[in-house]
Length: 310
Image 1 (spheres, rainbow, N blue to C red):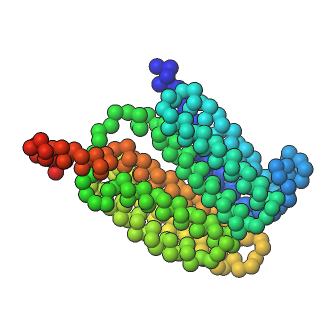
Image 2 (cartoon, one colour):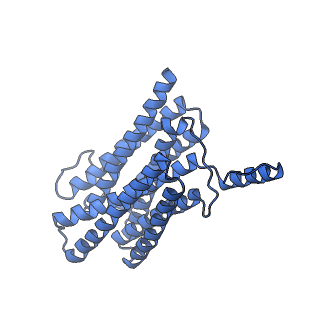
Image 3 (spheres, rainbow, N blue to C red):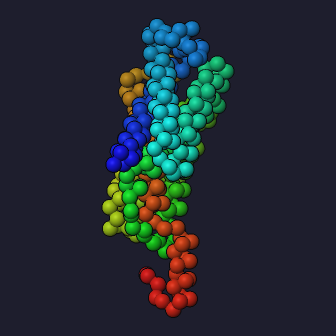
């Protein structure tokens, strides 16, 4: 009973860490949208202090640093807790990988402040943030009581396999977020990001329809598709609104409230879409047997003279 309570506790703590990471992503987006990235010239201190004067853009930059420190501490606690309570090697590896990523993210943030080159360093900083978020979401799913319960295994004999299609969709969403970060930080123009959006429309719709058509009776997969399509549809609308806000902002150094709200919401929507796709992918991995296993079983059944399940 105590072990089960500990496992549930570490799972809830992982989910709480995910929620704090979403706040951290929002705080980072607020820094960029308010042109506050250069408001603090030193790191890890701020104007040589632990708590600087909270004026102007310093408020956004300092809040971002505080939340980053909080997420780092939560991730360390999570890694230690997982190591002490979960015997699965993958759970331990994922938890310490997440901690290594959050430390690397902090270093990249320092490089952005001290070295500059925002087109490169800020884009790398934003990219690593999404990779960390993807890791912590995956860890939370892996720690969940649902993942560790006895679940029936489904066969997928069609092509392309749902497992592969959802995985490629998740990776494509991650790549699209990198393109979006590069545009926001001035690495290149909007065209690659727009092209990526077109590709994602095809992949997300294709993956969702494939999973729903083949496994419409499986509640977890059906809900996963609904969540992904809802997040992605909202993200497309936010993308159009954010692009309109960027085009109308011009060269104004002081952004309007509408500009800040729309661009931050677009960044948040991208992260939630990535999380939704990751959850659907992991659900497919947990519930659907690999195609190689299905092929092996079918071959074995034919050799034994037994009919195969259609």
